Figure 1 (cartoon, rainbow, N blue to C red):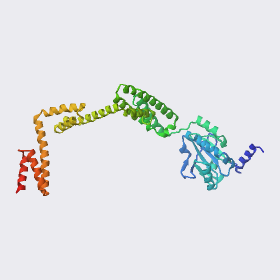
Figure 2 (cartoon, helix red, strand yellow):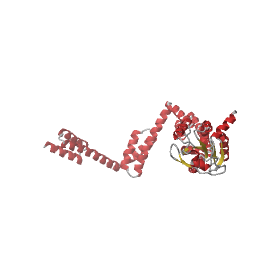
Figure 3 (cartoon, rainbow, N blue to C red):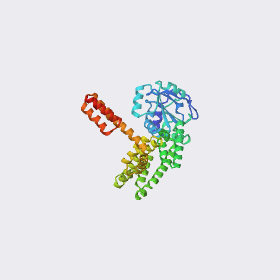
Figure 4 (cartoon, rainbow, N blue to C red):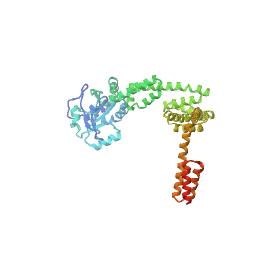
Length: 405
């Protein structure tokens, strides 16, 4: 007996005694709804709109079905990320057998189980009178092919070619295209960092779309080319001793191209420059200049707001802390201007003295109240010595007299 003959006999064993009319044929748009055997989630063919759907009728007791099991698993693995969704319709009556076979053969797709064999509502509605029986359905729900699963590879290739599945839902696809449009504009406007930030937010699912994937690759290649071009401008800056410019350029590139080979190259150059003593000295000087400039900006704001009594000590602090900087030089000029105004300086001195004298008097009073007369006398005397002929000195002298009595 030939193998072909044996296969034919095995196939006939999976045909029901009841020859039903094959209701669902190529060109039809059938309905299919059920609860998944394992997850109990609703499965609806209408919800799979946009995908190519493979509906496979089978059973664990069907020899030809089990002979195709590994083949169908391999086909599902090959086509799952190409917009193909497998759906199984089991004609089994024993749920444990079905569960065991699904686990052992790695059937990971949704499975219908009614437990009624040929009398199940789905095989009756679809007119299935023999198994295995497989249907390939287009993204818009039309049956493209019906046949034995050993021929499904060619049928799927043809279906994908002639009826390309929509791998991404329209909303996600629209969002991705908006991001790509803006990123392309950013690159045209020489704003690669903005383009890269946008691309980082590109929905992962959208990359399954061929057009999106193609545009993304083109953009990525152009950004890499742009970044490499910018890197070539760094070495001449270093050669000319313009370390600060080089470092700023490298920092910008490492941030703008974060996660790309351009950023890796930029960070490597930064590390090399950072170990050079000459570069370290220049960068420290630049840091000092920036700090001084920031302090000067605060002082100038106070001056512009007519808060001279606050601005003056700020300018003096800059002169003291940053003597060899541009900000220090500018602050010194402001200090000189303020100090040429004797009335202003007298007013400042009076307020400064008042604050200091009142602070010492407060300490002396606290000591006196606590019974520490020795410390109190020392503080009162300090006020008299530091602020002679003042109202504060008079207050301190009276307090000493009170202590003596």
